[in-house]
Length: 219
Image 1: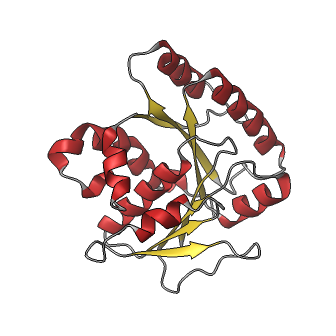
Image 2: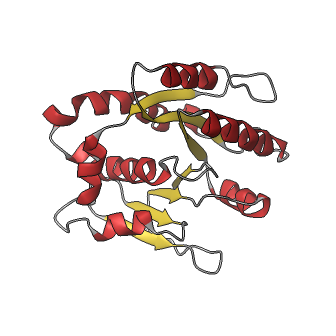
Image 3: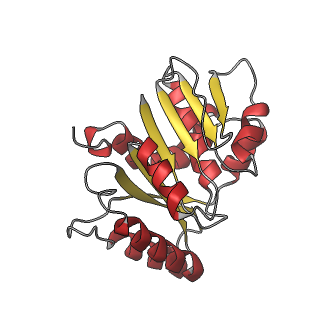
């Protein structure tokens, strides 16, 4: 089972938007997808509730008593996580996933929070070393702004403890398409291509990575 974790302990980073769009993408590819809402706010669960039965099916799973019941036959599991994850819960989420996508906003507060979190993440012995593959995404970006340029530079220069570069996949713009899609429990890949062409182009590097062996731990 392919397991993708969307995680950033900083609230408001757009984890649910990234998680739901990853889930919808794999559903459009004919995969049996489960979207696990581990956040008490239930944003992903609300998104699933708004989804029409005529669309590609996406299963739901909720974290109960610190455990998930994943439907049998799931090909792709997407984990949408809460803000403020503690060390113990962080280790548990990481142990369940093969791949982690970390959305970061273009603000000094969010970049500092991301730096603290990555330092904490790298301090968990063995977590980053071949057990899980991690990449960052600049999210809700206002294009052609100084803040966006600073975030792009920052994410492009993060390194792992072994000196290797932490993959930075793409910049996702702040777009009304995400709001329109979410209202109906959809992803941008389920809206008209003519209206979402630019957004799809921005997603392309992340999707190529998720579909490649580079996003999977070494066996």
